[in-house]
Amino acid sequence: MNDFEILWHHVIYNEHLLKLLASAAVGAIIGAEREYHSKSAGLRTFTLICLGSTIFTILSEKVGLNTSPDRISANIVTGVGFLGAGIIFKVDDRVKGLTTAAIIWVTAALGMAIGDGHILLSFLGAFIVFGILQFFITFEKWIHRYGETRNYRIMVKQNEDGFPKIDDYFKQLRMQAKKGKQTYKDGVIVCTWSVRGKSVKHERLAKKLMNDSRVLELEF
Image 1 (cartoon, rainbow, N blue to C red):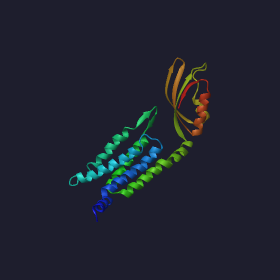
Image 2: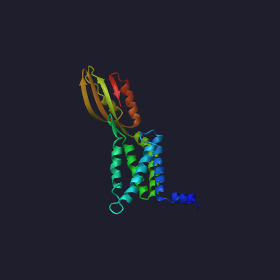
Image 3: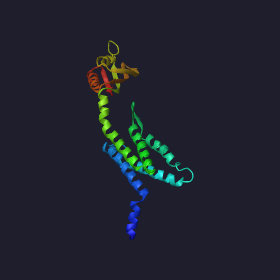
Image 4: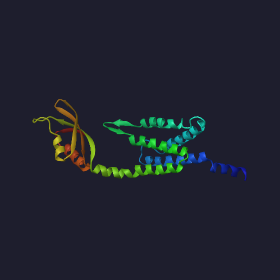
């Protein structure tokens, strides 16, 4: 056996190399789905998260072999938590980035599993995550058809009969509505509503409000 064959044999049967390659593949499976949907964290991000978690887990076992083999890998969860928290932000009354943060957390867990030698488990987990992200979108749309909550910000002007009763629209469409903050200034009132109902009813409600001459501004 020549030197090249010895080197190739060593590479093929190197356990750590196989773990790193498997980690990159698992991260790429999840990252590709995120990249396809043009999310803030994509292919490279998830591949690096998975790969980094694998390396830290391997190092943890080696560095803490005679003391505490989990001292480094235990802190991966904390580090990933800070990374995930950085992409969660609030837009108006909605919180965005929670799904991406959760996927980062799961990807790190899959990388740790590979680092500890559970490669098959990690690949199985990656395909389950991919399935959840890809096919649960249809399931969510089906749920929203039968009921979803939207927040409305409505600006109306006062008329001779007093303030217009916006909640009459909700009653007509048989939607559940919860009144929020209200402000009044110079004959104009701004009110917020949290309204729950079928998606088709939300569309009808929006059309009714837009066609109402008393409504000065509508946001939902």
